[in-house]
Length: 631
Image (cartoon, rainbow, N blue to C red; front, side, top):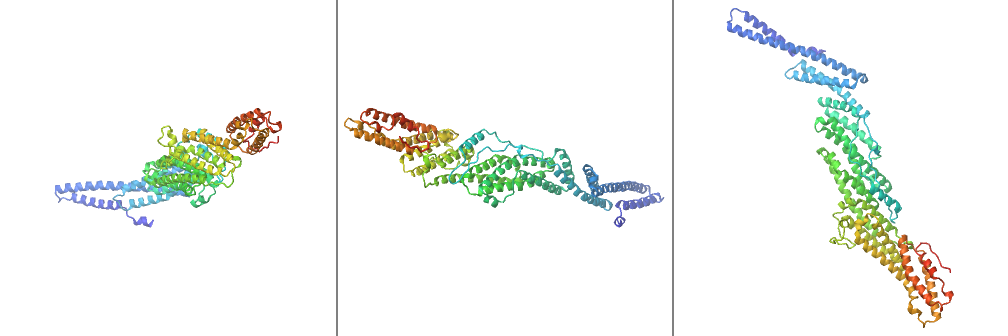
């Protein structure tokens, strides 16, 4: 009150000066001693002073009007501060609008003025400072109460690819599961493209824009952005909890056991797709809807909201890429690489502005890092095969675990063919299988980097199997083992998408390989037995005793072969039947001829097996169940 008394209005001072001047001019003009020209000049001056007086009167009236308006909005603001719920927020926005209008009018009014107008302008700004915190609280209230989420199941981002279970013995899950997973994956539909949802109820968007307009208009844009960014960050943090994404440090990720890390990677893949293609696209749209009228502010706010969370997700990926590159991680590394590759365009669009350049750069840096990790894991896989040594022979000469594992492994890798071709394009294309890249009969796909790597892996496998076969003391079983395993490899290639990578030439070569082992088996196992039944052994000069001895020796040898080779196992039914038929076609006719020609010279007790018996016994071979002949 004392301050108001001490302040003298500029308008009142001017009015006193003008009134005094008018009085003097009137007195001079009324004097009879002045000339007409001077009197006219004095009267003109008096008229101008009258105009100034009118203007000053209007100023005085305007200032009083400003005072009344200021008092009115001040009362409203103080009432709101005392009891915020007593007024609707839209009414409060009107009050803030009135304060802004009043400030603009006073600023224009007091450009060349001092005193009262300046004082009113100061008071108006103080009232605005009181009103802004309440507006900030209203902003927070709307953003929190009207935020919206969508269920993660909204997007069909589930992978149908099978996990390959790895251990140092190369044992793995059942093949049926892998084959089923391969079929499911190949028929899976393309993953959903980027889409938007409403992260804030659309009914409050206009209200939020109004708050932004008032706060920006009052030069409180920093306060608005700070509140807006903090609220939206909290919402994104809550959604990451819904997606079950924990905040793990890089060192924590590196220490995780594989089964735990595998689960975390699955969640990461799903979260990356949803966050980038849905949530952040929608977040940026929300920022633009509310702040799009204020230049680059919406871009800066979006960057501040999203950057820390994107870097958190990328740090997890970096930790995985930094870990040891063991074969079981190959598919997850490829999954993570493919996610980044598929999202690269989305990230470039989301963060194309300068403020998003850091996130964009870190994203592409991680993508390249995963590419290098995949290459390293390929090398680790090949080395693991080469170093898989055994001290004891594999039971029954069957298909080795390592063979099953490797072929199912690369069969699953075949589903990533396009990705692998991009990553392995700089790798050496030397084909250990002997396929020349200039051969015109090779299909184009069998010359791609992935195909060369697959053939390199199977060549390493073949070398390892050859070493394992030498553990068998029985030469025949060595050939059965190689036949079983090479045949398994051929069937895996022939009956899957791998045939496109390996080509017809590889299939012909390896079909010939297992057939050659089958012939070698027959020669080693049955050659000596068949030599007992040769024609030169049944000449007329051979004594009855010699004929009987040879027949007895053959039956004894056959019984021993039967005892040993019924335990051997050929898992593929057609391969087993083909070998049984081939053996039967060589042994049975020779035995029939021998016993038939010498039936009068060999006592019945020495002919232990009939021809039908012999043929039936051969069908018992390679069943994996040891049997003995007691007849």
